[in-house]
Length: 148
Image (cartoon, rainbow, N blue to C red):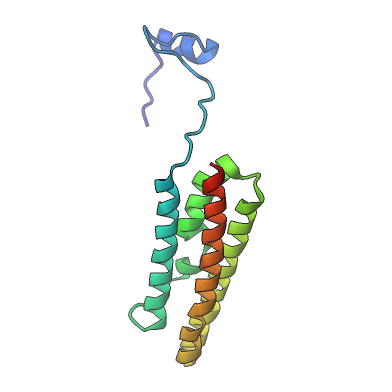
């Protein structure tokens, strides 16, 4: 972080929201950038990567990490909080996405517990629940994207 003192024109710009420099203006609250189709596609990729990590655990390729089931560590959860909520937080779809994501993480954790108890086939069969929840999340993402 830069801790140098502000130049007089910078201070003036910040305190009075006037012209900051020749040809440059200061907007105290810049509008948020509209989300693009690429932003929503990245969210879908984050969901696919989560499902891939879960499959790796259920098929014995990797060990489960506690962060796999934590909303704040989940890439889609992070995107939801950092990108989607600031712009669309008041929409019911956002609460729905968050609810479904929590349900996905809880269900995933249950499936991993089943796997650890030796109920491997049952746990793998439970991936259908994850796919269903993922499909519902995708529908809500599509609804928000289309309203954009």
